[in-house]
Image (cartoon, each protein chain N blue to C red):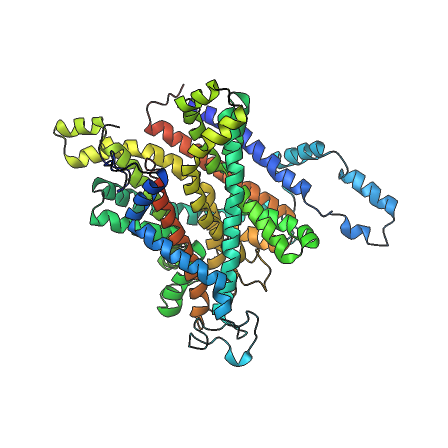
Length: 310
Length: 319
């Protein structure tokens, strides 16, 4: 490029060379410069810790019905208030957070796994296979995702819950479907990386030394193309959390007695005028989680993939 | 130009067919049998049931059923809603205008925010304005639409009492008053969708402009003595819009997803809320048709993006 405007504030054209720096430390140095990302990483870790271990310290049960304490505003006894059955919202938010995070990370894993597989196959093969796989990727990109998500869950929920139980069935279904609709950007990124990497000298050298195709892919190309994948994967966690909350908010996600964040909002929306706290706390949790994950993703992009901006 | 659009249309047909195959596969793989109820009904003997199945073609191979379904869809025979006893295509036609109105207005609002803010931020990279805009954009697309919707209802309807939070189609007023009431009830849904999309597009626009702004042809334009505004508008923005159009087209499925949520919150009688109520009522023909309509809309907007692309980028030849 002819210009000198940097794609991101921390992407330096020529870093001052001190002692030999490992790629990991170099990435960490760039990540640290993104102040919002560092702050978000701290907040996000705190929230994850709270969600994972909070129930040891906040021991109220999520389904402890207490009609004498219905729809109470936040107080010391109930920091987030109570709902229409007198159930403690803090306990329910902590429980819902575990589900939301589990769905987010599991769906990300599915998306990255499918995306890397499709992308590497397309990136290593020329001609027909590549064209067909990219057509499939483009087709999936133009699918109306939310309607299809709703359709698939509507059609398959009952059958799956019969086999593995209600919560597990819905969990598997939601993770598979959300992951199955989010692999396309990863596939495209991986394919593009493969296209440029497979012509590089070090791959040529490995081939000259007689390395097998699998070894070239697994040892040489794939590790070098993971930077953008990590960034995309981070953003995917946030997207999956939003998707799960949306389903629950529409009343079509987890069963009513499972208090996910979206489900809490769904229950709260008809009581907005006299119990606004009921909706605000779960909503704030979704917002904070997604915001911090997005910022961390942005910092990781500066650290691992300084050329791309969007 | 006409030829270019025609070619794009022809390319869209395989995509539509692919989507219809996926839709049909999902339906065919789904467990459950429409004849389940009859099977447990003792008044219907097994041979009658078998004859019924044969006459409806349920036991035919999958591909034959697919082609039968496809031809019916193409002929406009979209079936019959189990719940409201109306033809599905009529039902959708009734609901479609509300959806398109809300989506269209909110997209215009999103562009009206994203273009100026993104361009202004990119021409002053890392300034205070840029940083504030960037942070606000992050907040904007991290707020899920269902939460902003509830917050707006809380603020504008419950606390301030300025705007109605239920969308009504039967406003008993005429003339200016009718328009005014319609405007008031459309403000919140449009704001929710528009701000969300505007936030993510601001970042697209900013980075696209940043990519273009220091290219040689821009420096040349500036050294010719052109005023800065003309350089920005003619030499930067137009080129920067090319990748933005692609990204906006890729966002279309998300836009429709957001529209479903907003319609549900504000009870707008569009096809999104039709889909949700159909799912809750097990109304399969309506669910299938609405999903297919959403797919067609996504393809249509991709087509529109392709045409825009051809207009913006003279390197793409029409022939």
